[in-house]
Amino acid sequence: MISNLVPVAVDTQTASKDFWARYHAYRRIRHAETRPDDPLQPDHLVEQRMKREDPFEFEHRYEISRDGQMMSYLIAATGRPGSPGYDSNKDFMWADASVHPDFRRRGIGRSWIPLIVELMDRHGCTTLTTGSEEESGHAFLKWLGAEGKLGGAENRLELSTVDWAMMRRWSEEGGKRSPSTKLEVYDGPLPREMWEDYCPQLTAMLNTMPWEQLDHGDIVVTPAVLAEWFDRMEMQGTVLHTMLTREPDGTISGITDMNYAPYKPNMIDQQFTGVRTDARGRGLGKWLKAAMLLHVKEVHPELERVVTGNAHSNAPMLAINTQMGFRQYRAGIEYQITRARLLARPGA
Ligand SMILES: CC(C)(COP(=O)(O)OP(=O)(O)OC[C@H]1O[C@@H](n2cnc3c(N)ncnc32)[C@H](O)[C@@H]1OP(=O)(O)O)[C@@H](O)C(=O)NCCC(=O)NCCS
Image 1 (cartoon, protein in one colour):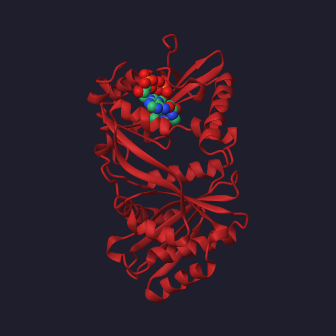
Image 2 (cartoon, helix red, strand yellow):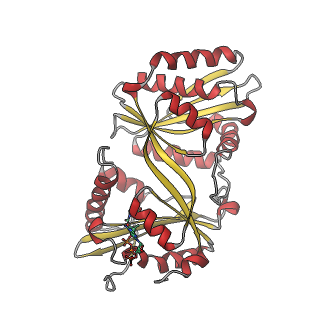
Image 3 (cartoon, helix red, strand yellow):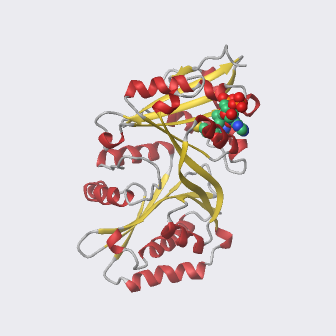
């Protein structure tokens, strides 16, 4: 079995060249296993991202390696005291672990349990959240005693299948049905003078997303959070596109945003789309989605597909996406388990 293997903490600030070589070899194997047709993020961008300390979260990374080969990797995170939304999120730790396909079913996965419990105790966390899109992950998490709480999928839209006449119609009809509502377009970070006003409106919309059975705290976006997102995007060369609808009194009634990373020029990530509950049923969601699709196709002519993630229970969003032509690419489940139940597993 694996009794002589121990998890070793990774400090990305001081990690050696050997660590990065092991890590990049490992993530290539995982990439080939999970998303073989997608471009791989270049090593230097990955290192840059992992070396940047998150001001709002503690991030703990560990590896299990032998003879210069990484066999397993784990990341766990939880909010830093004082970070926006800390009070309602402090009980939760999020983690993701994987084992090299050649070394599964030898007890490596279960050997992470004592470390996770120790990290949860260090931060006073009582619930662990983790997810999987793989059969092995579902089987392991069921064995662990974790409960599936939120079902979702990565959905993709192939631009070759889009009915562009319908998209133009949605976009035009949106404006006609709400003649006093303005559509605003921003390429790149939002202007700083908007942040104070934008953050509470985005926060309110984000917290209307369905969570199904998942226990969770509030999402709180402040100007400091936005600044961190924008700095990271600039550092990574990612381009943000935002569209919003604004009512005559200045209220933002709908938001949609997409991220474009130049290392994968044929795809773009559709992030959040939300319409205020009191503005639903007016076609704003379709207007925003169609206008954004027409816009990014114009700005990035090399695009072939849009990638997004949705909860299975998000009926209004899925209805729009399905009409546009989005199809399921990979399904996944978010699981939770309490510290007490983790301790009850063998190996803990
Ligand atoms: C999930 C994962 C980390 C498990 O790692 P592992 O080292 O193979 O797990 P273990 O050997 O400790 O398995 C513990 C128990 O889980 C169950 N289990 C694990 N993988 C299983 C599988 N593919 N099929 C059925 N049961 C499985 C078994 O009961 C196993 O005990 P047993 O081998 O004595 O029967 C690994 O399969 C993986 O990397 N999957 C892809 C990533 C992922 O989905 N991670 C999600 C978890 S955060």
